[in-house]
Every structure is written in C-alpha cells, then in structure tokens.
Image 1: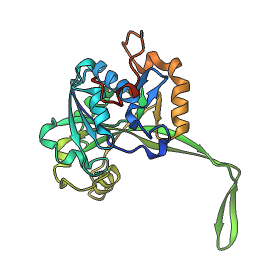
Image 2 (image 1 turned 120 degrees about the vertical axis):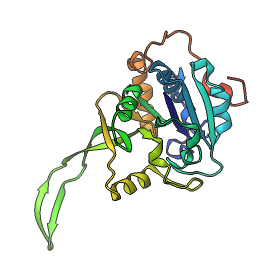
Image 3 (image 1 turned 90 degrees about the vertical axis):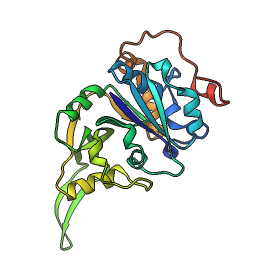
Image 4 (image 1 turned 135 degrees about the vertical axis):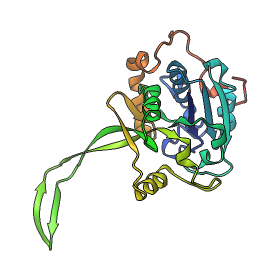
Length: 255
C-alpha cells in the first residue's frame, strides 16, 4: 500500500497564504495542515509507504514530515530540480514503486477511501483509474446559440453539469514505463496519449466531501467546513490538543 503525494508546486493561485509556507503545509482550521490530514488518512486506510515529490520550499516539508514515523508511515522523497508536471516526477523513480500505487495532489481535502480506490484499480485492467466528481457550474449570463448570424436558441443562465478529476489516481507501474524520465509530463499529456492509443482510463466516481484547495475562496471554505467535518476527515483520530502549526517549522525545527 504505497502512495505518492505531489507536493512540489508553488501554490501561486493561493497567495498570499503560500508566500512563506508551501501549499501542502497551509493550516486548516488552525489545527492541522492539509498534508498532515492526508498522511493521517493514508495511515488509517492501511497505507504503509509514502513518497513525497517535493520542489518549491521542499526543505520545509521535509522538516515537518521527517521520516513519517509520527504518522505510522515510512516516508521517502523525490526532489524536483525543475518542475516536471504531474507525472514527470514519477518517471525517474519507477524502480522504487510497487506494481500498483496511489498518486494524489498534496492540496486535496476529501473523505475518499484511498484504499478502496487503489484496490479497485489493482483488480481492473485499466492503465490508470481516476477518482471523479460531479460538478455544477451556473452561468451568470444568458447563453445564445448562433448560426449564420441569427440566434437559434436561448438559455437563461443555464446550469452545466460535468465530471472532473479529483487529483487522485490509481496507477500501474507498467503504464508509465513507456515514457522517458527527466522531462515535463503532465496528467493531461498522459490521458491524451492513452486515449490516442485507445487505452482508456477508468473512472472511480465519488460523491462525498471533496475540495481542491487551489484558490483563496476554496481555502476559506475548507476552514469554515473543518470543525463540522473533522470527524469525517480525520477518521479514528482522538481529537485533543492541536499539533504545532506549520509555521513552527519555518526555522527548521525538527518534526
């Protein structure tokens, strides 16, 4: 049960919160960092090993997580000298990963059962399994269909429904072995290539709690939600004295 957490991004959309702290260490509810919640969840669901792909302010993440023993996990690190995208960091480290493994972004707040996703992927023949979520977008405008300069249809502030990737994936090592290491390679590149070869990824639909904490408004919502959902987001945790906030590690204090 091995998970790779992508924690090397700069978090530019979440500024000013990420000016001095990497996005995975931004605190939620003034109690736990995003990364700390994820590490606890992985241990709860039976994961034993975590690989952290780090880059921007990676030394802070190392100081905070250490060897992972305080989470009941064994943690190793992949360091990006230059940004390699979502999949790029994995390509040079496939030899250290098991046949099937979980990959996830380090800024996801959800109560998804990661083990169920990974077991489902391992039992399938899919090259990759994508956790998916239904989203709804309401247009602020009336939408027009136009043909040859005339309006053929009108919809007043329509609602669009679609499925999105949650940033959590079940992977098989052999899926990635065909791609060269050391160059930027994103999840979009991978999916487009798989589809072009008619090798279709699988969907793992989820309808529970999920937030991609990429923007200040998402972060504000996560903080507003946390006290209400803490039991769900921290399963099995005895909730007592809050742990030190991530900024306690800015000067290199040991984890």
